[in-house]
Structure formats: C-alpha cells, structure tokens
Image (cartoon, rainbow, N blue to C red):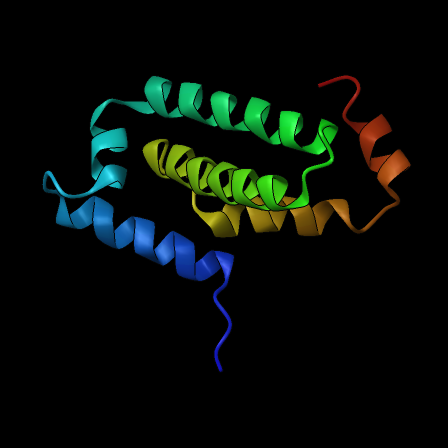
Length: 107
C-alpha cells in the first residue's frame, strides 16, 4: 500500500490550480488571491490550536489536515514551492533548534 505524502497533496493542489473550474475549492481559494488564502490559513491555525487545547485527538488530526492544506494553497498563491520550504528546514537542521532560533533574532 502506498502512503499519501505532503508531496502528493502539493501535486494535487498544483493540478487543481491548473485545471480551474467551479468544482475546485482549491481554484476558488486561489482566485480570491493570496490575502484570502492567508486569512483561511489563519482561521485553520486557530481551529487547530483550539482542538489541541481541548485535547480532542480526532479533531486535532482533522484540523491539522486542514491547516497543512491551506498552508500549501497559500504557498501556491505566492509561487513558493514545497521544496523551498524543505530547503529552509534542511538548512535549519545543521544546528540545534536553540542556535537556529537565536540566529534569526536579528531578522
């Protein structure tokens, strides 16, 4: 059995963005612009936090899926590839998390 990955989700978002049409929620989000996509991401982030605070595992999983989806749609709206984010994460792993965070203080 193959495993669904975040790359699979990014590819699906790319395909739906390219296909267009009224049947695509992804296309509708993108057509409303990056600012709208960012707002939706913020809403999903809040819902994810609420699910975590309420200690509702199933709700947290569902909201986390929504959060990841909306993050990828926002990245698509700004022409940022998942690989760009992965490269930034890889760079950060070359030092401890505390060192990396301290290095960003001036930014």
